[in-house]
Amino acid sequence: MADNTEFQKETETISEHTRVSSVLQHRKKIFIFFLCIVFIILGILIHNLQKFDDFDVKDSYERTDAAETSYIDFGGNLLKYSRDGAFYTEYDGDLIWNFTYEMANPRIDFCGNYILIYDLQGTQASILTNTGFKQTIRTAMPIVDANIASQGTVAILMQDGETGYIQICDEEGTMLASGELHMKNSGYPMAIAISSTGERLMVSQLDVKAGDVKTTISFYDFGKTGEEQIDNIIATYSFSDQVIPEIAYVDGDRAVAFGDSEVILFQNNAKATIAKEIFVDGEVKSVFYDERFFGTICGTTDEDGNYINQMTVYTVGGFKRCQKTIDLSYSKAEFLSNHEICLSNNKEVAIYTLQGIKKFAYTFETGIYKIIPGDSSRRYTFVEDGHTDVVRLK
Image (tube, rainbow, N blue to C red):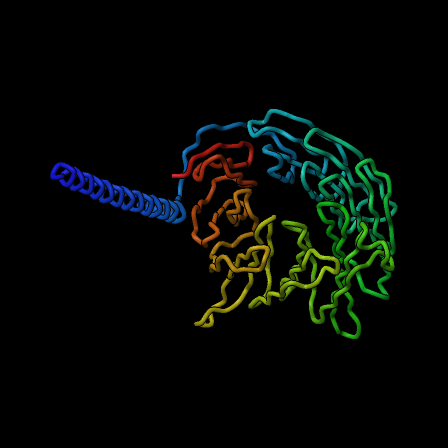
């Protein structure tokens, strides 16, 4: 009987030790987990707060370009275009394809693997992909604006006297739909935007009568939603005392309109209802956007009455990410492919994070045309006058 009692006590002692050991192991795992979280947070903070004012050149490639050449980071390669043609190359300059044309004022739009190059106030629009040329569309009237969808559907806005025309074509140039916009009814057509699916078209028209300014935004649907609507129009909105020269479809085919004093966000539903109106403080000088974010730069005054340029960045849902006073006299504002904000002029560059931190600032000796993020937070490709450099910030 005594042996059983001693055995029971030993068993209870072992169980207690096991329980205590288990509790300690559990606490140790919790401690390690929270320690990892702390290190991750510190890593993110350090990453976001890093600032650089110089760089080391890792690779450099000479490049010869025509006058007034523009550059686009497209599909992991470099697309450059001018009045004489377009060249699609790897960053080191190796040619993938080239396409020759003559345009007095070339403009570009792209979606998915498709590229549209059109002649503003001209009569030519060419469809290309990352593999080369597809089709050229000739118009009967001067082009005011043009957009391309992810499957190659093209929307072209033209103008002839007091009438605007919209033409929808597929990637082969075959006309799918067309219509007229009479200025006496809705005003001067300023811009169009086609959804990535090619089913919806947004049109902005400016109406000025007796000194009163009004912009009308109309939504056309060429799918099932718009079949039973007159002229396929599913929604029309008017904005008094507002000029809205730029419109776009962003992430999830959400429509957004950029006015001179507000930004309007629309729902991607059957009636394209207004989701949010964001009124800005001051004069809108620039807008820029990508699939996930948009930004405005406004001229306004601070608390001391000083005139400043204020940059504000939002998500496409309308939530503010950051607000920053900028001091660079910029000519171009854009999002890079990693969602950093790049402000630049001919020789000066400033890169900001989404937290409003100025990550990099530099003045180049020659012209800087394009900055392309690399495979790490400090690696970039700089497209400069006459050469392309792969660099690491320091």
